[in-house]
Length: 129
Image (cartoon, rainbow, N blue to C red):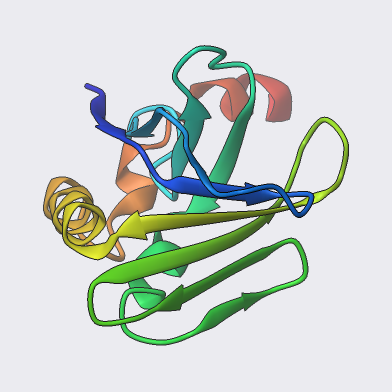
């Protein structure tokens, strides 16, 4: 199962004027139940893997450190990242409500504390045998 929604945050990078950037926010609990992926619509190989708890907590308080930071406001959610191809800081500003709805659905699909139930441990069994 894969949950994916289109989003179009304003991107701020390298002192340029903010521009909308079509992206896909997705969650694949059978692949990685702990994280969501934020990828460019036109080039899904350019993507960030974000902890779902970080995104959830960032809806109500400023969180994160280093390369990933999340800060909320009444109507918006600011996400500060490092560009995976050049390392430059990237600022993304989302409307808060669609992200909040996505995060709520993610935690409904896999409740907190139940993530490990979704992991396939069969490869580990083979390695340890």
